[in-house]
Length: 201
Image (cartoon, rainbow, N blue to C red):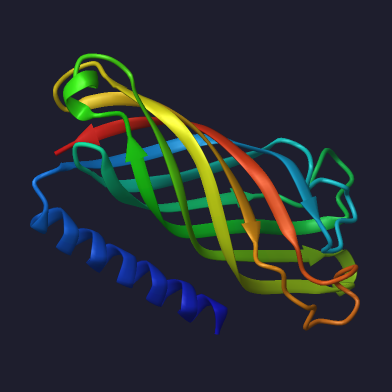
């Protein structure tokens, strides 16, 4: 069920991006990125105490940005989010996010040849998965979430640039539906910092 929900959300987001990109005379950008999560906090069982530790994250952001306002669709996956070091209590884990966001950036005409800062805020879905040794328990949850952050983009040519960004993700408060997998409801929050290659078309 959760996988189908993610698939429908991705297809809807791609369709919305394509329509908006055709309708607006604005910068249209794809930003594949790599980065790290950090300062995570959770009420889900975390046997390796890994949620707060740095963890690899990869993803991509599609952006439509006008003179000041725009929006983006952001997708990212953090494999091994609940795993740390050689504890080996967790076999596999992921935290995946998909969000649609409003973007407010410095005016394009004043930053065309320099760095362009921006802020973002929006919401979407957060999917958690975790499998432990001995089938002690499994977690498969898709939760509504929001994110907020900011970054800066600079172009080294008319089509290619580099971007740096920080965002905070947090699910909306949710009561636990799976006994024994959380402490005091279902909550996960973390920061994400990343560097992107920016392709403008």
